[in-house]
Length: 230
Image (cartoon, rainbow, N blue to C red; front, top):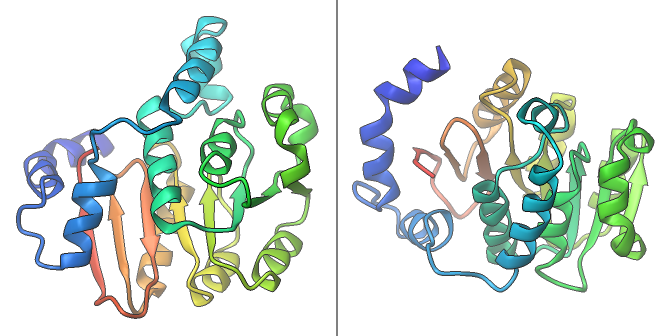
């Protein structure tokens, strides 16, 4: 079903990704300068080396099981973080740690709140995050992690790699937190969570290629959804 949906929407998503048919000036600039930006960023090389090292020592099945982010998505995550400039970052699910690095690279003043009850079992993520431990707080309770992010009262962004309670996403959206969601194509629960969050948003914009999604609950923006190509 996912592949059929991708095929049927391919032309319209590719068309929109070039900015065509987008009437919102904000969305047009975001799609052109962030989502589809082709110019190199300063941290691309480091991400390329990290991902390449992991790929060199693992099989495709192993990479799928450890939830290794693609280099294209890692670059997008870095650009999105750079665009919104959050000081407080929330990550749900450690994956391999590449996502954390991509977000923390943007600003040395940013701080990451990482929720993953199984973090101790993810040796690769722990090793990759070793050099950033002074900027990372780890949690095994999602409510506590969200509480502390919201209490900071600073610009926020959340990355959701694995399903979390819908109530937690609503709290973040109410606080105008930008949310990035991955693995929509690999998890029905993630797709359902994104659909529910989109319906809950009364204002703002969402952008997705049905694999990764960005929710921006900016109250100054008219409610719109954009299907794109990455």
